Image 1 (tube, rainbow, N blue to C red):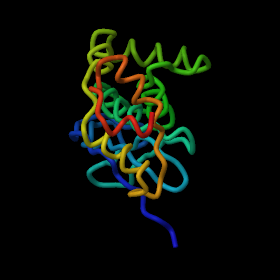
Image 2 (image 1 turned 60 degrees about the vertical axis):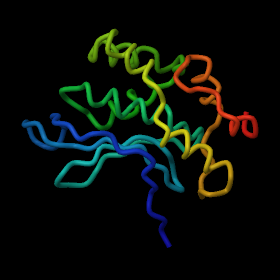
Image 3 (image 1 turned 60 degrees about the horizontal axis):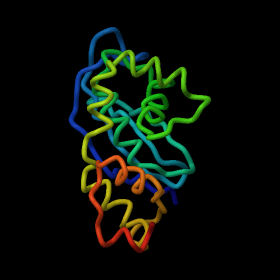
Image 4 (image 1 turned 30 degrees about the vertical axis):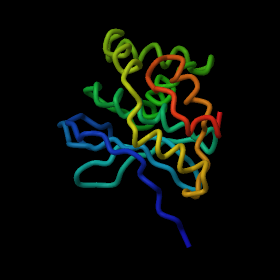
Length: 166
């Protein structure tokens, strides 16, 4: 039996031109999802099948949440590239091999907007999903390492529950 992906976070819908879906803006909802196969970011059009991008590991839903914020700043989305590039741009330390793509994406949204996104407080819903996954309340083990990075960056405040996972 196929397991349905879990949606950890739904960001606000927005209008954007999506490659392959015509030349007019459509309404999409960016989400953070988790499935047996992978974990990442998706955009779900109001009337159609969604586009997903994710990794088997690590399951970094903080980077995926940031990707939803980054995607909302774009006027055009190429799902085959921009979902992944947004995820990597949402990491505190993007992979070296992704530097050029992340730089292009940051130029598209503007450095100041990117800096704002990177300084946003991580939503409680994301933190709770990570904590729940560690306590066995979820089928998926989400990566806990980003919590420490976000504490150091000031986007997450220390909680007693973190002492069991960090």
